Length: 541
Image 1: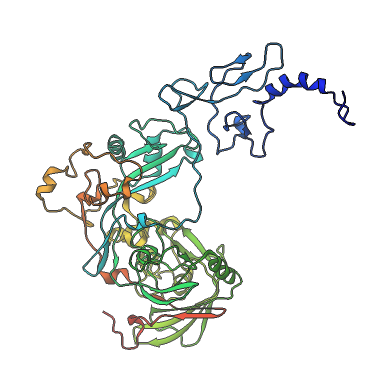
Image 2 (image 1 turned 120 degrees about the vertical axis):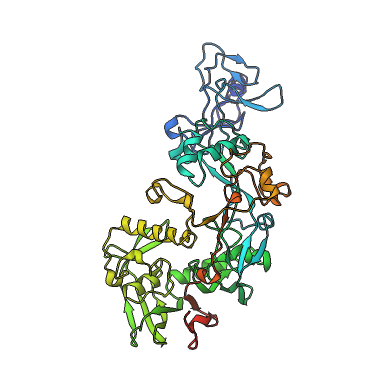
């Protein structure tokens, strides 16, 4: 019997059934990503190592199928038929856990990377990690536990965990990482790792729980200048970063607004240097953020700063168009150089008191440290600029672009000058973060910057700096760093910072005389009060 005009006999269906059964576990076509999905297991496997998708796990060693039914349930073609591509499935072990069939005994399995939602703001759990306290005119953060997390980078594949920690994360010694591993602080794919000789693979997930100490900032509050359905505008105090970076997390504008003003899920619309104060805008929604960023790209926004500089600045308007080159992104060091990017700043003197001048600055471009570098080039650096008004630049201090040393020599001399002043934090640097070429030959701790704490009963119960690290430390489980179990512990036996007392900076040492005075765009204009050091009656110390 025939079906219509298709020319297909019903009798052929009976012949096709065995073939259809065998096709049930056949491969789907190769996707553009280089992964082949299998209907039976919903797993991924790359055809070859050269085209393997990074989101797929390492392919295990599998044996060719010989025909029949395997205990795991996969169907094999009978003898004599064309052999299909080998199949890998997950079979249930006796303990109920899934294991990869065909995996070589003892081979370490790396799970595929987890999907992360991009753009998620900080949560209440993040804000609750620790608390603030105020002392000596400074805002301080109580020490707390924090998880540093990262996936294995390409340059780490094939290297040992010890090699990666000792070369990429130099803030701690090898002895610390060995002790941290024994204490369960280091995890690989969420499992405690005791042997730091383990070789890393692609997609490995590393977690390091550390006892974190943040540098202090000034105790000056963040004043709200304006708030509506679209934006939040604040008057940022000097010394406070806009968002978490480096050693700063809770002592940032984003975290203070979230914890003290319940203003969360904010989108920074522009940045201010940590030592710069003044008008700072945040969008409340992604749509508003994109709209204003488009205005920034179209140069529809106007920014106005005020600063106090050395000497008598010219009374007429001055425009500086010198190109700026970044010398070091780590330190944030720039200088005027013909190879740099084009930029333009307009300056106008507002007042002169016989020693220093208050100058209004209008940057027409947005290069890193643009105002500070141009003022240095003009021979009128900001009075207390910790980078561009130092002896490291030579006798002329960079005036006219005259710098009698190489970039490497300049960077080294600048770091050495702040090391001698016990002020590396001003450069957003920590001794352990410095690259090897910027460390002293013996790499000692800064004796001038450190004071030995007075002995207490608690100190006698915990190891001192010379004693071996205590391994009898509570093991930290994933997510516990911000949990109640460890949150209240302000001292940690593995933490070097806990055994040292650093000298606090004076509040005035954390203030630079550069202030964002006004921010204007289509349909809005926000300004902040003139700072005290810019007033006509201000007297220098």
